[in-house]
Image (cartoon, rainbow, N blue to C red):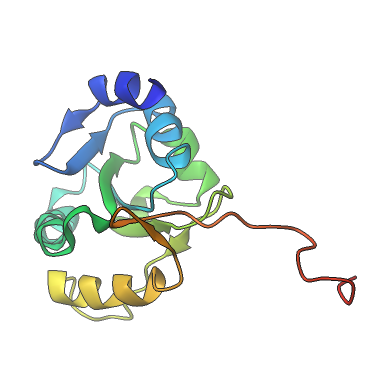
Length: 153
């Protein structure tokens, strides 16, 4: 129900890429969802920097299909989230992978390579390789503290 309410407040960028309009929406849709998410952080004030990344992101969504969830968030609209995950306007475009239930994300480091969909697709295969799939959808890991057994201190 919460997902349905949140999705009504979110504008669609394409058939599967969601534009996340607020911190509340980000919390409800990305962080509370058991599925894995890739979020592209952008800034409306830096279109020359983000347009190639947005185009690659849409192409990437078409390649990956329903395995992952995709969202785009403007740092000026999700200020608290941007601060929490250390995304600044000067850093956009920035791709973050949400692959666990913990409030943490992995920065998808492109290492100076071009931001093409093929490069991103190869990177995502590695980033989400250990996540389980349920009905062909990548599921966030649940991190357990002290699950290592009696040897762990």
